[in-house]
Image: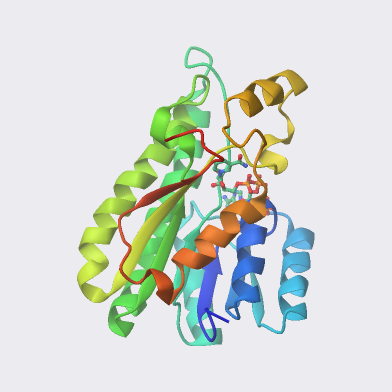
Length: 247
Ligand code: NAP
């Protein structure tokens, strides 16, 4: 019940970690805006599961890299629910390649969807959060943003950029009682990590202290906690949820 009456926008909530975050927050009694890019069927499934938990859900298609679409989503949320208490910037993509083979387009797209998206949505929600003198913003970064990864220059740069954005926003919005934190998941079992070969998976597991890949719910419970009033004095932090890779 610790998010009772709160309204949350979760980007990329149709699948994977975003879906688990939406359900964890709905389970704590928040109403949820389920953002997605293309998979309407999956987004409707998330919304149905939220309604099963007795909470309101609004499904909203918006490409998070598009400033006006994100503004439209925030306007629609304010019209439907009257406020935005929580913003979770979760939507993300990968376009992996070694730098010599990485296309400029893949650099640009990954930076836009993983980093510019957070600028778009923070800018769009901040006016109403500042007015309300309340807000919780959580950015989903990655351990790759902390320690880098060969073959993921674009993704690592975007995720490291999210950490700089998190700390700057924490300083800028802190005086208005808005906290801004980041979570840095390790290897979590979702569609994003499904393409990994058995060999790569084995190698990764060996680098994890808890000796297993993570589940979306492992990340979701931390995000829901950070969104709650238990965490009103925590801001500007980057918390790894990685089974003990970065320590
Ligand atoms: P996923 O299963 O591939 O799901 C991605 C989600 O993002 C989907 O809901 C997708 O919507 C949405 N999305 C993609 N592009 C979008 C866009 N332009 N606008 C709006 N929504 C968009 O990914 P995941 O593994 O759950 O990852 C979620 C977040 O965690 C990402 O930021 C990722 O970088 C981060 N992360 C993941 C891992 C991991 O191991 N999985 C580790 C560290 C960090 P559609 O369903 O409509 O396509």
